Length: 444
Image (cartoon, rainbow, N blue to C red; front, side, top):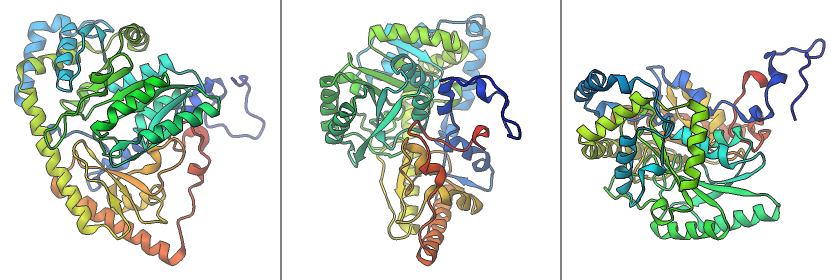
């Protein structure tokens, strides 16, 4: 319910004079914990293991700059003009070729180009979710997705994973529990390959079962797959969309396999859904940047993009190995972690009694940053977990960052043994289930 536009009571202090004018849905629009880290994590003396920034130094920048210059010179009148909300036709055809590597057979008409896959997430949530609807998502889950769900007032119900990804039996139990509560599930949001943040991959033998469960209960599947081509063993897993094209909306991105700054992603949807997405894109941006799309298209047409993905794989595998060896060397007893077979992230559980969100300021003081686990849950869980990203720093910086992190955790263990567990974080305890939150000016 919207509050009346009234001045604050006498003696009250308002930090935002517009607070009572906002729509009710803005209550779920809060800063993510990862975004809040960037200001300190970007300082050169801090080893940032927090953000998932790609290793752009691996790109052939000289040849790319020549191609971009030629693009402006020869096609500038098109590249710098308004375009279609659907996306550049040639790029949509090329996207279908990229998805074919994962077994997807698609028509370019069913591809909608977006400003990064985050825009795709936002549009899918907007066209499917009413306030109070339920979205199923792995626990933990991508913080950007949780933010979109919260912004549209959808309620997230987490489904637990294990080393082989989403557990089908846990999915069945979650669906049954939501049904008993009389609530409506709109879709399952899943990151099947090299999960962010958990780093695990959905086992191939589970994929058909997960799809069958969702189809039997009338639940749409939203497959988010930015890392699928970045497997370190060279294996490319079959996309969920390749098995069930009528019930899976697929989100893709060039941010991890080419250049994040261009912000080019896409949604592949069933034909009827596609039309709604185009309308949503028109209302959000009118059209995505034509120049950026044409740069990606020119890159795919003129560069060895498959060879570039192989280069990325090798660079990230080297960094993964540096992170794992440093964890094995430095982390205290009681710590556990996974060894991802692709992607950007390692998910770590710290010794009992340690709160990774409360520990974060002390870690930054020791010049290392990570992402605390609570940011990846909509229900306040994850206080013993944290995510480190090995994609951006050099192997030497990764090893040093892990060493610093391990020392911080060891200090926390000593404090715990001396004084007892870290006091609970009241902000986490009192958070609503709407999504990850940090203090904002409205709640100061």
